[in-house]
Image (cartoon, rainbow, N blue to C red; front, side, top):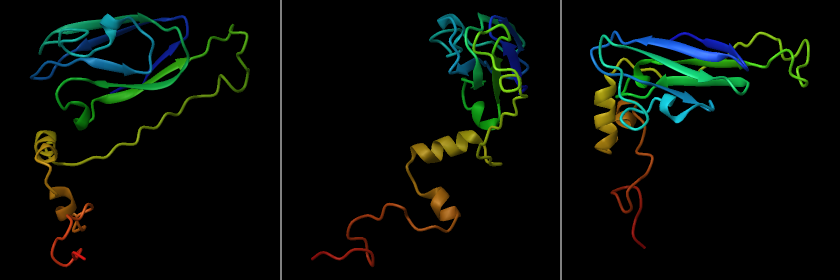
Length: 153
């Protein structure tokens, strides 16, 4: 998803055209905004239905680098996230020429897998050791008195 860049004092207008086969919504981490624009489906907004368009509109009242992501289903796990940059206004009394106008080069680190996120979610909820076994790593939490691990005294 694209890096979104605004300047403190702007009004963000982010138009989302949902081209997915399911509903979606966007959640903005660390961004001060009206609750109705928070993007938590069925709590702060209705999901954006397939084929529909929604415009998020809110004032940018802070500066800094944050991120945004889909807050629907497991869409974040398939890469639906991006950087959200809010630059400091040049007329801000604390604006430092040569420091606050440096280009932002945000970096998002994430784990990636070719597995279907629904399967990963199911495996995690089953609380099995599938991932550890697949990586040929020992059980990270040995069960007490398991054969060959702990002996009763």
